[in-house]
Image (cartoon, rainbow, N blue to C red; front, side, top):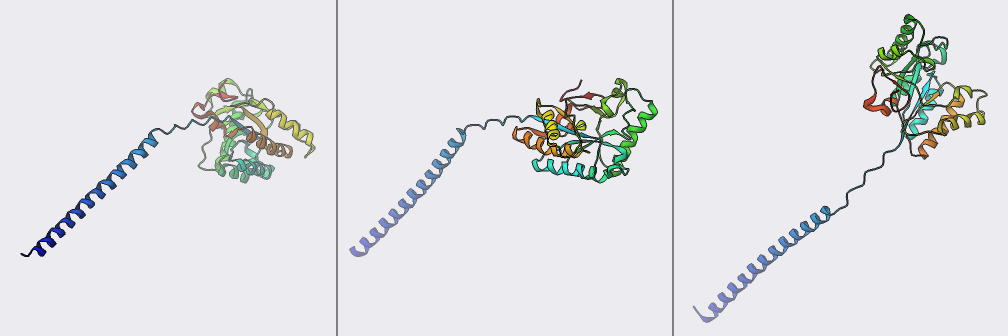
Length: 269
């Protein structure tokens, strides 16, 4: 073999060795970079500050008696929807299945929009006190209202009842298959129902609702009056500004809710 050929072979071998060495160094460098990147990322995640828990918002339950009303109940539901709020409607049976206020469809509309339906009574005769009326009359008022609700909402679970005027005997509370719901805030809206659109009366309803409102309150209103609807628009906007959530009675009471117990606020009495 000539000297030239020997030199060419040595040169080729040397070049091959250099290439292999560079390739090996490049692979180590890439691996090292990846390891360093992962380590930095894990370090960053490991030292991230934990998120502080969000403060619990105060909650109240708006409740509406004496409906449903074919116009005003729907308007109130639409107003609740603007804020993602829900309320509880204690309905009168013969206003669900009868012609007065023609409210059956409005009740269905309320339930379909996430609101709660409870029993109020079938005839709403103020002379009929659940604290003293006969067992036959009491059964008529409650069972016929339940029937009227279920004819419109066949799969609905009725959990609540509010006696007419809030009066009911302790025995009937204990034996009731429903939770008995009274209230802690009375807006007295039924005394400010005429003339319709009277700003002083609407302001009085708003003031009664919000003057001392606090977390856990159950607020009494009536969805059959125009002034109540007008006041509800203002009340919902104010509660929203004040940081309140408006929820159903069942949502407010949660796991505490039980049949055969009377409630006036976020606790029993």
